[in-house]
Amino acid sequence: MKKREKIALALGLILALIPGSLSSCGKKAAYLSDSFFALDTVITVSLDAEVGESETIFAGLRSEVSAYDTIFSAFLPESELARFNAGSGSFAASEELRNLISAARRGAEETGGAFDPTLFQVKRLWAAAEEKGSLPDEAELASALALRGWEKLGFSPDGGIFKGDGQMIDPGGVAKGWITERLLKTLEAADGIRYAVVSVGGNVGVFGEKPDGQPFEVAIRDPADPARVLGTVRVPGGSIVSVSGNYERYYEIGGQRYGHILDPGTGMPADSGLLSTVVICSDGARADVLSTALFVLGAEKGMELWREAEIPFEAIFISDGTASVTPGLEDRVELTGAYRLASAG
Ligand code: AMP
Ligand code: MG
Image 1 (tube, rainbow, N blue to C red):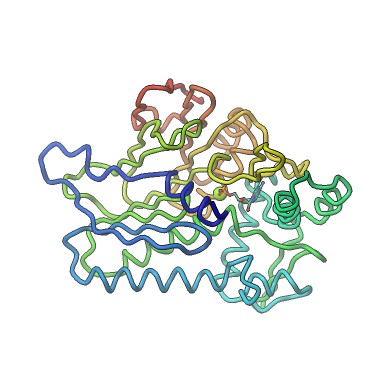
Image 2 (cartoon, rainbow, N blue to C red; image 1 turned 90 degrees about the vertical axis):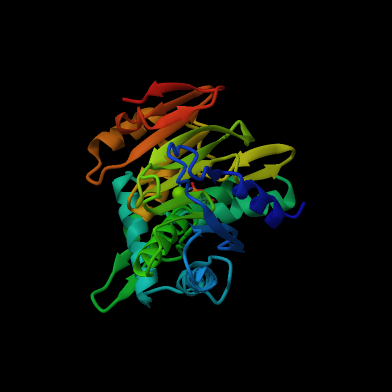
């Protein structure tokens, strides 16, 4: 299977929506859906089935996503981010790119650097290692790692952004959550949409209120067996649910799997004992950043972050056989069997 297809298949499996399955009075939410491939992932938009002009809304969202792709793609050589990455000094950035870089920097600061958007060269070494079938060279890894440092990201008053010499920025752990929130805002600005769900490769945003007045139910994949669901979490409209885990993307080298989430301290795949992390927050970039950071930090340090967070979020730490939840989720998570619910507090 081609890598692109492998990723598409895997990401399509991370989170699924269970439309209206909590409904008690028969007024179930019904959806019209549109799925497409962009941002190197599968995107699905599910709209209130009674909305008029759904084709126009779908087309509008597709073109919005494609506009973000031409700004943020790290792989399209003509994207704005690729041009920023290739250059040095102050870069006259669009408002969107400035906004994303600012969310990434803030995320790094808030997570003490567990989330670090300046690891792109390290990521590229892992991708090259997969291509050549042998582990990254230690000296190369050390020099790629020496380039990292989110503190070097900066902003000038005239709208410019800058980074450290030779640094390259990876949008991978933040852009999809940021875009998910923007798509919810677009739905909010459109007329007459009562409820909708957007899924952007591991980030699910829910909008509005369902006709039965019940919360949305988002299914969480079992990281140990991604064809199965380990449970569901109930969330109100306006939430973004981000999932990070190594079962979705990894580098396969010499028959071994190496996770795509990297420990910024070592440049090696993060190994905190977790299989996946789920974060729920009304700020999409933050949800995305935090799910990646908690995966790096592990449950104990992750809970320290939760206690100190200025902007509230909820999280699920999934390890072998256990789903540990933050206090706000204790009565909002339902598990299907193979996992035991525990309190992360
Ligand atoms: P996510 O799927 O949101 O957890 O993001 C993972 C992606 O973010 C990876 O595929 C990399 O592109 C990038 N990444 C990996 N490790 C880190 C890290 N520690 N901090 C920031 N971005 C990372
Ligand atoms: Mg993330």
